[in-house]
Length: 223
Image 1 (spheres, rainbow, N blue to C red):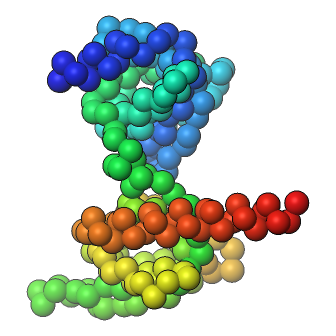
Image 2: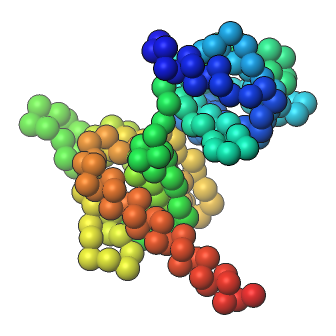
């Protein structure tokens, strides 16, 4: 643990408003508002309203914490140390997140065409497959999608994504985080990118931000 990170945690004022993005055991995330409480740095507490802490937190994974100070916010990754009842989590800071890295976490509602496929290796008995679907949201790290069928495997899924309002297409490998069957033989599938380049990640984030601004303009004109 670096002394600089400990110093940053020590400087955060007690009882500040905060938000945390908690990983769940089913591969999903939940974002909750809470109150930051001091402890022995780099440890700290987050206090929630009654009965808001999920029972299925994946404590093996890190979470994203944002503490909202009066002048600026502090964002960092943290691990869950203990769960104290239904209102308090004890966490420990692991690393700060700079604004550039934080852009990777930005997720926008964005619908566009996506193709998922699988190409088995020469020693594999699995068969190749390909499905066309639609994204529901998109970020520099992954996407939530709708497909007409469940994937036949969850690893080494190749993605081909056309970014709307551009001539850009993203090609990368991914793996399935979760898959949920919907009505009318449709599947909602969350995918995490595995080998996406920093350039492609930046292109996706830029597209997401443009899409957000477009929605804001449309909503402004609609008022």
